[in-house]
Length: 160
Image (cartoon, rainbow, N blue to C red):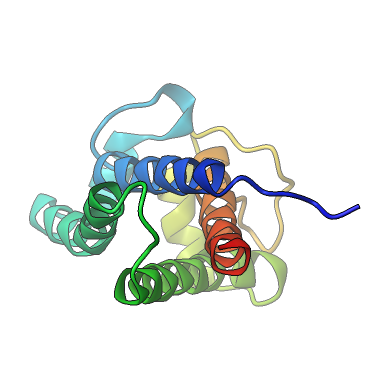
């Protein structure tokens, strides 16, 4: 029995995943979310100007991608948009692996440990500490969402 995947369901899923990630990128350093983040701790590690710049630079490409995805809703993704989505979400996932998972699993990084402890020590985490790091719950959700976005893009390509 072959698995049938509803293309419209994939498109809605893609939009939902993108919307979550865009909201995360714009808001997670600025809006308190209980124990999921610690805005004051994050803001203690960087100047306000640097945080604004980092927020804008990291959020704008994903915001444009979401806007074009909404604009093209109900139509096949054009190659340029599909490629753009693959590039930015692959880049995001690679950055997440480099920033969180490589030091957590394989390569201790004393500077990163010090910085992340200052920023995320008071946030919720469910994983055990390794190499001095603990990926917090909100970032784990983001990383899973990023990987899921790439899976959905793959399914869209091969079920259309």
